[in-house]
Length: 340
Image 1 (cartoon, helix red, strand yellow):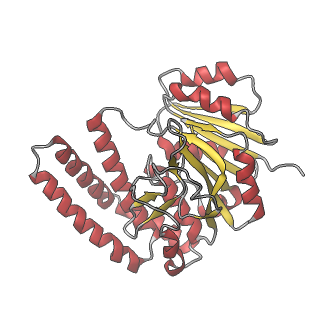
Image 2 (tube, one colour):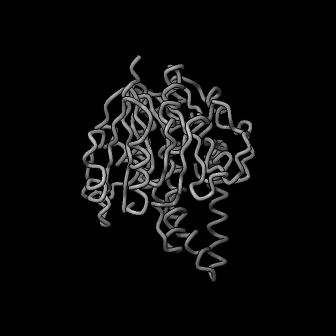
Image 3 (cartoon, rainbow, N blue to C red):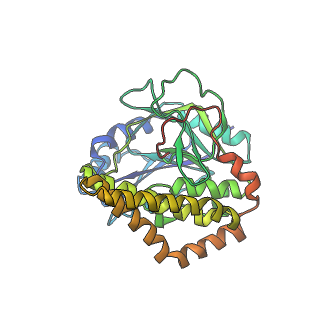
């Protein structure tokens, strides 16, 4: 029986350091039917040309060039619009894949049509005995938890089991389900886009799972600014902005007020406190970034609410009472509050 066609999308932005290793391992995947769509986000380091020189002869590889950095979300959307086949896989450019990774993912998807998304087992590239992420979960206010992050792999996560959200570094999606729930919200740019998508998948009545037999090694942090002050502002602003937007779009109205309001009040106290301790530059950067995130959502509330109406009226098939229990961490130690 022929294996289903899979389109593997790799988004690249100035990833010259990692891209050759990623594509080299990816194109050696032991799977009979896949193509690779490299979406370059306006890189200035020559990485797309390098990829073409090294791997352009391989008929599996297609390179799509964007004129500018459109962000992780929209670049993947562009890749998904070029995709063919039954499934699409999103893979970070700072990864190395095991030869059997794709066959293990598709096997799980083929065995259960209710599964719309699945995440591979992500280990740290430089310390492969440690987990990067074994699936993502949320608290009620939208805080994300990367299960297993920086814990030793002792076989504790060896079951294919439900998770709430996949890490976008390595996730497979059923294209039929995407036609019902939509692609990434391109407004996110970076962070929370996969959380928002997986939440919609659950609301639509599908499942999201973790597949431990699909193994990928992940470097991590390749797309984050390297200058510390830029990094703080970039992460705090986008994480808080997108966290608020995700809650606004996906909760039923009573739960939206129940869980978002206390978090906003707490964040306001943190912002004021950080401002008062302004002799530390990091405090001021946090205060400015978080304030900007809240104000952005207020200024864009009308457009966010339109998206909310689509999610609530068109996508939603299950009530929050059935979806909220899926957010909680299962069989996990989640000491690390790391975005997944």
